[in-house]
Image 1: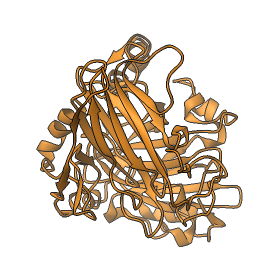
Image 2: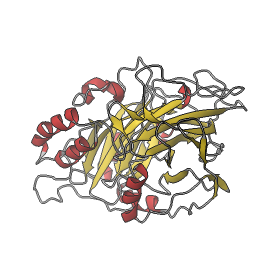
Image 3: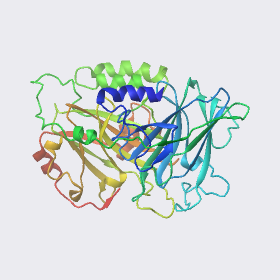
Image 4: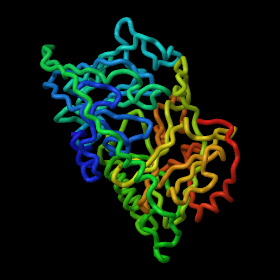
Amino acid sequence: MLANVVALLAAPLGLAGLAGPRAEAATASCAWTLEISGDQVNALYPDEAARYWVALMPIPPGGRAEIKGAFPYARYASFNTYTQTTEAIDAIHDAQIRPDRGSRNPFTAGARRDVARRDYTVAVVNGPKPGRGVPANTIYTANGGKTSITTNVAYRIYEPDLGRDLTGDVPLPAVDVYSADGEKVFAYPACPDVQLPDLGVTVTLANAGVETTPGQTLGLPSLGAPATPVWSKFVNLPTALVDLVTSNDVLNPLNGPLRGPTSSLLPTGGFGENVDNKYISATTSGDHGSVVLIRGTMPTVVHTRQGQRTMGSGQLRYWSLCTENLLSQYYACVNDDLVPLDAQRRFTIMVSTAAARPANARTECGVAWLPSGPLHQTVLLLRNMLPEPGFRHAIQQVTPGREREQMGRYYPRTRYLATPADAVRAVGCHAPASMG
């Protein structure tokens, strides 16, 4: 079960038991028993600007759960079902959901985002997804060879508007369970708030670590990461493991022979991925330099954070870059709203320990910064969400192994700089033309 997997990952980190309804509400539906975020359970590579609530729904075979909620004031929301091994089965996102009678969907292109009546109902059916004739607002527990013994559902909200709470100023959805013949068999009651306060674990880890010195491996080939960072598209858990083990100067020749079978013969997905996101990742190491310099071009995105009155459009719904560790925790993320750009939408991002942060790694100098955490290795994770159909450089359109070629100027070109002073000399300080 997704919830069990997350609990196992969280336990050794001292984070188990930190899940519960959101802090802002006195009560919330008891269905949502686990919250994945930096201040609760930080596992499965979450995004800093998002919250993920997980429910284990005891739906009878052929029955359904009805999820009744309100569209949040946020960038994005969705529901996904999962296998016990955290592969996504089926999903529906905000713009695909038909509103209840008398309500309006604020996520469709050009829609008013401030509508007062914004209710919806989504069904989760315990059964296989039909090949055609899928009812509106319905997702399934079996699809394309993927199935789940239990029904694991994740509810996501990305980037609530400024001034809104973590759920986008709407309650967590209510959940009722029905049998195959339509009889209501269970309604989740409201639970009191049991969420613990933020203990600051994520921030403490992110800002730990000392300035590294290139060549700490005493002249031996680096086992931490290759000298030139390589970004690879996420395919599945086994392939990600192959990349982590072989992305270094010694074992890199084994990457191709091992990656081919795992990516082509095994099921896709894992880590509780969101089907609306696709990811590329790279592993870096302090063996090669104390600062990682990342440059590329930001796609156009949909902006909502300032409470925009209408739902806009862009090449992507959302973009972010995060630093992570091998235990699947994030240290920090910068999403599109937080990245300074030049007039051609080009960005510069630096990654280092807090102790080695270059003096020009700040917004005023046109540079975004991310902490690399206390470990010698850091995982960089780049997200693309819901690309426009015509945006052919999105990660969604990329063939594994051809990331740099097919992403073009949107590929994050990445190199090491030996010291913070080198980073200052290489980049300088220039006011950005815009943010995001």
